[in-house]
Image (cartoon, rainbow, N blue to C red; front, side, top):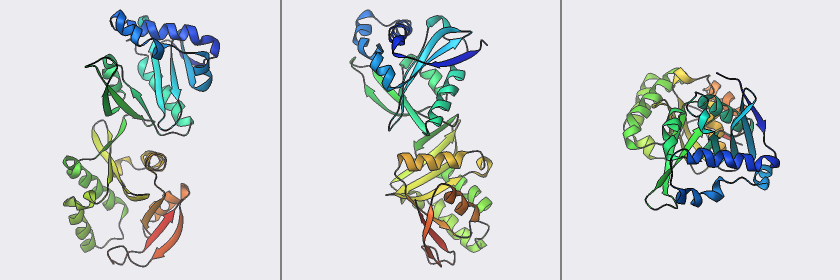
Length: 297
């Protein structure tokens, strides 16, 4: 594969990059009247380049495309275009890895994009999750909004009742690996609560975390409290927890968490992210003899 390099665009690049966007979009075979409707959104201005993160892509020193990122909440991949002769040449994953790296450097854990329908297959392969859709300015033509995470092949979705068996399996695996302080009877007590799904129904925000379709973790939030965060033991120590805390803080408004004091690794984990204990109780919320630390950031 040719060596790819990335150089930040300047306002003087506006015309050339706009031409690449038009050429690439036209390559999908859209009628001229549609292309005219998209003229404004395909045109980069010098001010746009100054205000956003626009990057030119080179292969063996030849300009082959560009991408642009709009920072904010949410962070958005606004443009990703390659010249037609450089499509389907295996560049896509390398470029998407660079986009992920760029977003991560900016301190974000997620970004989204509105997908070109004929590029959906590529975005699916890159591990995106469809979070919504809307009708475009062309009647009957619907566009899907994809969300991506800076960890590859990870997506976070709203959990539904059909996910409860997988969530339960993750909970059971995680607790066996991390909660060795629980008595066998209490483990079975909590296990039954989780198995019935009542725990999952108790939180208004319940997110499942998938890698290549498999649920590997989940989290639940009530108001600003992180009520649950469990990761399958196969994925502990691989950055999933760090990723999820960033997601919870930046996107779900989490500011508090309750942690079993005897779960020393979990306490240290939250402390590394700036949580501090403001209260301690001798028992948990059900009156069982497991001290709780109430932590806030």
